[in-house]
Length: 430
Image (cartoon, rainbow, N blue to C red):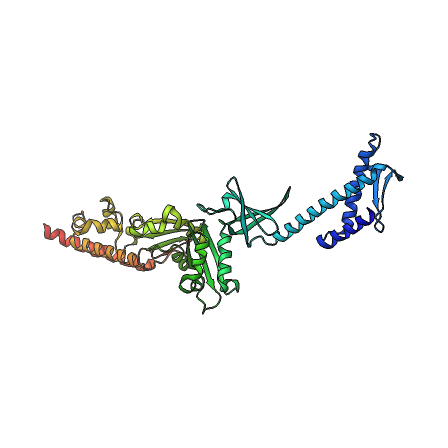
C-alpha cells in the first residue's frame, strides 16, 4: 500500500500537473475525518484527531491528542480514502486546467460537434469539454443536426458544480467580427480595422471599416475577389445580409454610408444631444427606415447617434424671416392671410398674393421670386450660416448665406420699393 501510494502520487504529479504536496495534505485531512467515524466517540473533537503520511516511505499514522492510535480498520479505510482523494483531486485539477484553457479563449471562435439538445439549448462537444449554445444565443430559424460540426463564439466561462461551464454564441456581434478576421488577411494583419459593428442576428449586420494604408481599399478587402470573402461569411450566417461601409471620423461623411441604400436630402445635426434628423424624398423614406425599422436602427447603433427620419413633406416650414427682402409690414400681411411660410406663399401663387391688401402685382411678383430662390437653394443644399450660440449643424439646409447686416439693408430697401410700387398701383386702380 505505502509504496503503491507514493508511486501513484508521483504519476499524478507528472501526468496531471498536480503538486504532490497538495495530494499529501488532502489525504491527511481525509484520513483524519475517516478516523473520527471509526472511533465514533462523541467526547472526541475532530480537531483532536490528526493523520500523517510519511513523504519518504508512505507510512500512514493516526494520532489522538498527539498519541498514535491503532485500529485494524484503519488500514482498509486508509486505502479507500487515499483512492477517493486522488480521484477527486484529479477531477478538480482537470477542471482547473479546462477552466484556465478556455478562459484564455473567451472572444475566440471554436469548433465542436452537436452532441444533444436540452430545452432549446444545444450541447456542443469539444475535444476535452462540453459547451452550451443557449437558445437566446442562436441565430433565429437556425437548425442543427446531431453530430453536425458547428462554429461558435465563446462569450463566457464560469465555474460550475460539475465543472467549467462554457457559453457559446452565434448571435453576438463578436461572432461576425471574428469571422471577418479569419476571412480577411488585411484585418488580421492590422491593415484594415473594424471600427464599429451593429447586428440583428439572422437579419442584417452593418460593419464600418477603415484602412491604415491609402493604397488598400477597406471595403474591397472585406468583400474579396468577386465577393468571395463576404460570401463565405454570409453562408456561415445562413444568408444574413451584411452591409460594409467606410468609416469616417466626420459624422457628415460617415452617416450617408451608414444609412445606405437610402439617399438623404438634408441632415440636421444636434451635437450636444447626439441627435441627427434626416430628411429624404418621400420615395426614399421606406429605404431609410428599412424593414421593421431595421436599417435606421442599425445605422443608429453603428454611429452611436440617435437618428430621426422624416420625408420632405414632413420638413419644417421655412420661415418668412429666411427670405431676403420681406419686411415686417409685408410679413404681417402675409401671416394674417395664413401665408406664414415660404412653402405656403409659393403654393398660393402670384394672383392670390397680389389680392392681399397692401400688396400689388409687382410686389407680389418680387415676393414670389424671392421665395422661389430660397426654395431652390434648399433643394440644392447650399449651406446656411448658423449662429455661433447654437450647437446644431445643418447640412443641406434651407436659405442663402447672408450676413445679418446684408439682410437688414435689403429688407429696408424692399419695404421702400414696395410702398412706392403699391402707391402707384393704387393710383392706377383709382
